[in-house]
Picture 1 (cartoon, one colour):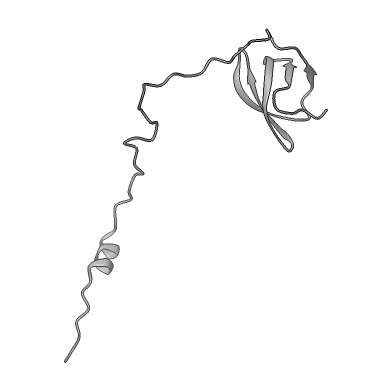
Picture 2 (spheres, rainbow, N blue to C red):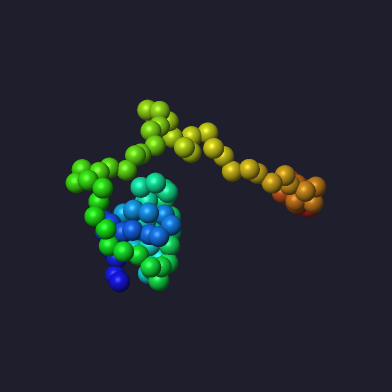
Length: 95
């Protein structure tokens, strides 16, 4: 079956869910009680009705102004002695 975004489905193990994205042979689904999952389109799914007409998934609240990347920096690999000497070598010219 061809599923599209906003289709409600029922999965045997995860229960009721809403398709958030269809990506080729995979579906991203937000399940009411099991959270977000990615499953193959070959999985047996049944068409379902939403729990209510105004149902909204709970969203994680963040503090105002905070950013998940704020202050995060990639770890730097320490340079070896050979690398350090290559980058600090001074070239001298003869006159």
